[in-house]
Length: 237
Image 1 (spheres, helix red, strand yellow):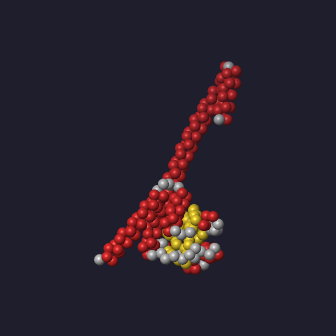
Image 2 (cartoon, one colour):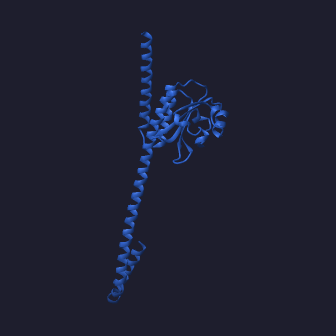
Image 3 (cartoon, helix red, strand yellow):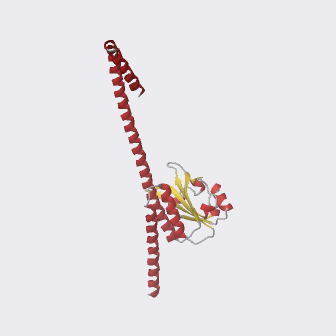
């Protein structure tokens, strides 16, 4: 019975830690709709939770397999070089990320520039988290360790859940960015229409004025000259 109670207490404690971690991540990713801020804050919190030494966050190009660096934290932020652009399959084999978070020795990375870099810099272990929303891969987060450490299955599941949580925040940021682009396009179209209407009205006025100026010149040359000046100003405008 004591063993059962101890096991139950351990499970409750572990679950509490998981919920706290999820809550912490939700707190940092919900503060902004800027993708760089979201990924930077999430990466910082993850390194704090996992006690790993460094990490990078990449955004996946829509419809492609190129990853672009969006954030870096830890030792990598100070001295270790990182790749600004990498191919997704230099990081994982096709289909691997469907399993959720991956914990691997750097020796197990696919052959490529990333593997050569982390081996040269003496990293020992890499944790790869897919950032997913609605089953769509939006990016990848890599956490690096100088020394191998055991990562249990429930911890990998937690990291996978956190990756989905960050993915939802990324999707919200993407939708907000798209809404901003649409609003700018709508305003540009409105201004273009206003300008078009204004020019049309000015040309119509100039046409009427040009038609009556000859008659004005015959009756009152001075007034005709003034109207010609107005016509010139109108056309220049």
